[in-house]
Image 1 (cartoon, rainbow, N blue to C red):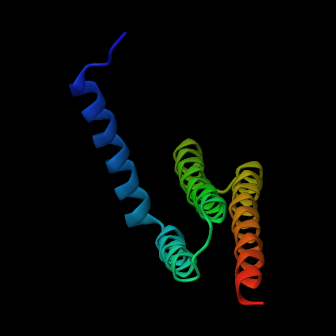
Image 2: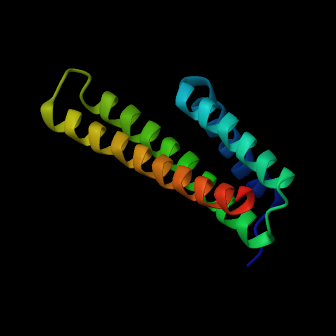
Length: 119
């Protein structure tokens, strides 16, 4: 069954609005996007292989997606319980750890690939 063009366009419109919300509200997302652009430029300058580029793009995508999911969960939890709650604080801390873990993993990947091209 074919999707109607209007529905596809609405999907992109909503996705763009979501991107704008995350971009506007999350300074970490903006920083991570700048770091991603630098990583991609560096990969291009060092003539990374297609496979290396794919790995870099996957790492970048994982970090940015983790940040977006973290934003969704924080907003939903803040709406659910605006006052401090220890369980909600725990969930938020775990989400922050998830983002940090993906960023560390992406950094390790970047350093390994960079070292491979510079050494």
